[in-house]
Each structure stands twice: as C-alpha cells, then as structure tokens.
Image (tube, rainbow, N blue to C red):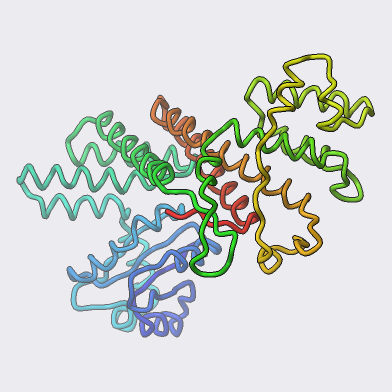
Length: 385
C-alpha cells in the first residue's frame, strides 16, 4: 500500500501490526523530526496521521505539519473517537472496521487545521487576521515547482473558508516566500568573512583579507597573477595549470576590462604555442597590456605550514605552493562572484511576476548556496555568521 500510517506510541504500532496492518510507524511520543519525515518520504509520498480525538491529540497531530509540507508529503489526518486510541479502537471494532474508518475519515491536513483555527477564532476579527497569516505561512512552505497546482488549489479552498479574496491570499503567500529568501540574503550580506587557515585556536586572519575578498578587481587580479606565474606548469598528467584555469573561468568570468583583455591576449598566445609569461608580455605591442602586467602587484595568499595537517598535498616544507595558490585564488574569486550572483538573484526574486518564476529563482538560490559550501569545504575555510 502506497501510504504510511503514523501513530503516536509504540503500543499502537504493535497492536496494528498484530492485527495485520503493517504500513504503520510511530513518532515515539515526541514531536516529528525532519529525519523521521525523510525516512517516510523514501518509501511513500502519502502520510496519514492517526491520533487520539481529544484536544491534546489534535495539537500533537498538527505539530510537524510545516516540515512535512516542505518534504513534499501529502498529509492526511484521522482522529480516533474520543476516549479511544488506535490500540484500543482496533481491538474494539476489528481490523476491517478499523481500516474502513480510516478510509472514510481522512481529512486534508491543511483544511482541517484551518477549520480548527477558525472555530477557535470565532467572530474575533483580530484572531481571524492571525489565522490568515498562519495559513499563508503554512502555504508558503510549498517550495517545489511540482507543487504549483497543489498550492493553487489550497489557496482557492482556503480563500473560500476564510471568505477573503483569492488574489490577496496569493500575494501574501508570495510575499512570505520572498521575505524568507530576503532574510537568508540579509544574513549572508551582514556576516563578516573570516578564514580559519590556521587550525590552532586563537589564530587570526591577515588584516587585508576582508578587503581583498570584497574587492572585485583584486580578486580578478589574483586569478590573472596565478595564470601568469604558473600557467605553463602541469596541473596533472592531462592538462597545464593554464588549461585548468581556462576551464574554471568558463563559468566565472573576469569582468574588469583591462584584466579581461590581458586574459584574452594570454589565452591567444597560449593557444598559438607562444608560451606567454609575465616577462614576455612586458614586451607586448599594446601599451595598456604592458601596463596591466606591470600593475599585477597582488600578493599571493600567505599559507601557513599547518595547512599540511588539513589539506593533503600542500607540501609547504618544500615551498612548492603553486597548485594550492591556484586553488585558493580561484576559489576566493568564485566566492566573490557567487556573492554577486546572490545579490542579482535576490533582486530578480523580488521582481518575479509569477509563482513559477519565483520557484525557478529560489532553486537558483539553493544551487548557489550548495556551490558556496563546496568551495569553502575545499578551501578548508569557514564563513562565520
């Protein structure tokens, strides 16, 4: 059966299993956790929660609703008659009657929750306004593009029950989605950037690092510097460091005009087999290129000998840090570019006209976060909030 029945206690699980109902699990008497919901999701998209019909059972059932929605589960609720629990009820009415009761009394979780809140709010206008906000907050948890139709249907049903304009509820839900992303972006923007390249407690960060991270031109200069300095060395058995850097710059582009031009010149000479270096380019016919090379005064990142403990292959003792200098220069450059992509994506989210556009942009946001985490992991750095 493509459904998971969730009960509150282990006794309920045992009784239902003994009765032949095996698609049942228990939360162990605690609030649902995200890990428990993900285990359910691995086996089925359909979750039916079976709890006692008293007020405590209702409140227990409602906990974890938002998490279940975020995991993409289709959630239904069945309340056992008062003064009963799944264990006593299945023994009282028998397996067939119990299963028939479950089938006939499944309620949509969101609609049921809304009905409960409306009943508690009564005719109080302020409480009803709170219900509207709570429902919108719940609906904003639908964060997958494939949930679009489901969300629209819920907005229609909830608007009818709340007796409010459907378009107004849609706008409120979309605003909450945007606010959530904006909050994440604000946290990203406001946190200081620190790099723990020394593993010992109390180690400090080079004073110029923060300025370097937030300066686009310096970041791009540093990438061109390692290209000029190490480009002709081997990256691995198949490619040179120049070829590796070219590959990385296909996705993350150099934008400063002078540096972009120098990169084009270097790449053209490299492809023509001229083996360009900073020294050879000092004699290039274009004076602007020569001046750009002369002004490549960015200092390499200072690497602590303790990197050997946390990043294999640093080889600090032999002073061959070319590979690591390339890795660090490229990755700090990428982090800065990702930061700018976050800013651009956030502005696009705020301007998005439709839910589908918002969903696509939110997926881009998540993808950028994942890329940032991969880069900082490779660097052995920590970005501190």
